[in-house]
Picture 1 (spheres, rainbow, N blue to C red):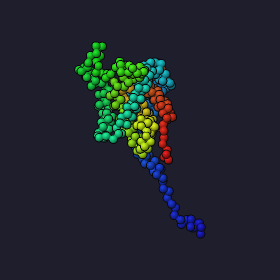
Picture 2: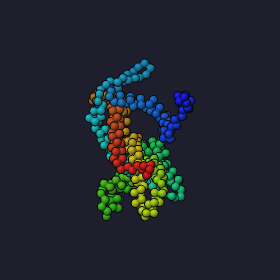
Picture 3: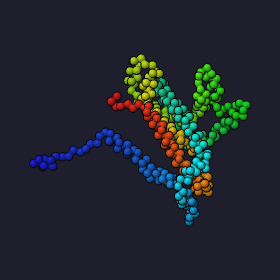
Picture 4: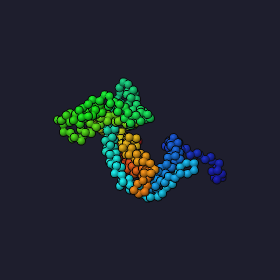
Length: 332
């Protein structure tokens, strides 16, 4: 009888938890990207890696042209450093530019996010205005900016001659201006030069800070107003509230924006390393290298060296930032 009752008892269906259902929904939304990555992008990555270890021999075939691969080992990677000193110089120049861009973009985007998070009239309009450069930096506007067409025309017509043969319309301020401003302050020349460069490159900084600004703004809006009310009741100043409450609460987004800014800076079309490698790739099939490779295989090796360097820098920066990131637990 007991066995019959067990057989007659209906089996209860397992209901997935809310977290599992959210995970399934997430996989469903990223499924188009995964399909495209596996079917389109991954084969190109494999082919690029394969070419970096080979010499590409172009052959003429009936109905078109083809190529064959001749294995040369690490020859292309060695040639990237031994036979191309300009490549090493481009890497160093790219790292210097990165050291300038990342702090400037993060500080500016965080400052503007804090300002735009305040209650004021027309707040939505100001948010849209600061995000407009992100939209304009795509397509034909990016091509115009990268070729400096507008700036060349402006320099030829409206520049102010400073007596040195250059136009003052390019630089808003100079280091000398800041030295006079901070004459009575104990500020190092390196900081003065950094601030002057940041002011002169304000167009590029604003142009590349839109996404980071939105991420910071979303993080600021996720902080409970009750926390700020408690700080106000305890008599905390705005400065203390920012460093004790706001900054720790948005520190995870500082890590996210830091990684995003690094990758965006390394992969931008006007990056000095990317421009140099593209020029090497355009050297033509007959451009031979000391190890027997050619321009295309050498460029593939340079791309992979650059890729590994980017991954290493992102890992180092992420590990450093992670030590100072505050993660709020659900029970806090």
